Length: 78
Image (cartoon, rainbow, N blue to C red; front, side):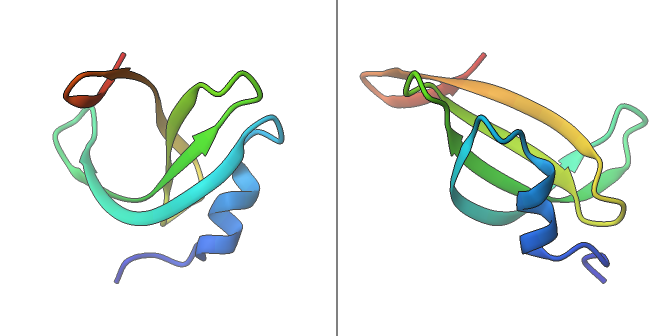
């Protein structure tokens, strides 16, 4: 199953400084090569920076966060 953490619980795990915009389910690789089932939460910071936060759907841990840079082709992570 996808996990016991709900979408609302995942949103509660992100920083209060970030405004969540969209939430999707995602699978990302772990350091050990396993697949991690996560919520991918696209957020906006106060300075309009866009950040993607990955919250583990099994235990609610933040697995990764990426700052997005906008360019001619769309967005890239840094």
